[in-house]
Length: 326
Image (cartoon, rainbow, N blue to C red; front, side, top):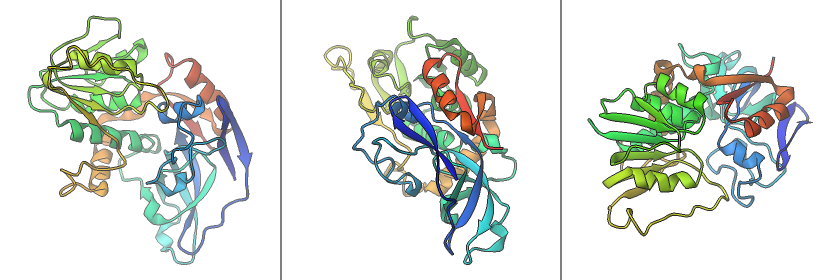
């Protein structure tokens, strides 16, 4: 078995290990493709993630902390090639999605896998985590009929959020990103306008999303949001410091700032929504949006270091990078 390891800032290597042997309640999965997260994985790659923080307390495959060296990643699709004694035989040969790091083989319990539904391709399935995040962002922001909505950041999450918002009857749907490629994709997905951060940005927004990962964008989001408006913060800034001007427009505006993170469900909605229901919605939105159009590059798994370097050095040319395992 081979896996991608982050060994230090801007250092990625492929390490070999013994092939995992599934226990009686596990299956063995051969990875077919995996998607690099341009947000969280770039924080890790650049050394901007807090080393003492748990990698992800809600995903068993991401045990341990974010300290180097570590394996990380959460978007793999593969095929079940062996089953433990206690596993129903119909799992053999099934194509599945897994929240697991970039590695050629892995053992998992069926309860930790999601069978890829009919009508969803392998490459489309790689977008499940980010589509689930976009669904969560809409649930947390609760956009209303006729509202004016602005989205800062048109990486994968921002683009998918804009695509879902485009299905709603809004008065305004605008986005902000510094890269022309991403602004073009944003408009293609349904945004009425897409701006560069240096432009005169819309103001008096009812609802603003900050998913750029850039701390300075939060001040811009506050400036763009009107009285009693809402700002949903989906960015994770890692160890980057956020400095806000809260002494001017914000002070009297009654703007509400809301932290949104996909690992949990808003307690006010938990009586109706479960993770399973949200996954079903995410699969449906994958079919509706066709997110595979956001794939800009495909790299063989063994060239993972080149893929991370490209994403780090040329975000103007990249959106979603996929690792292939054939």
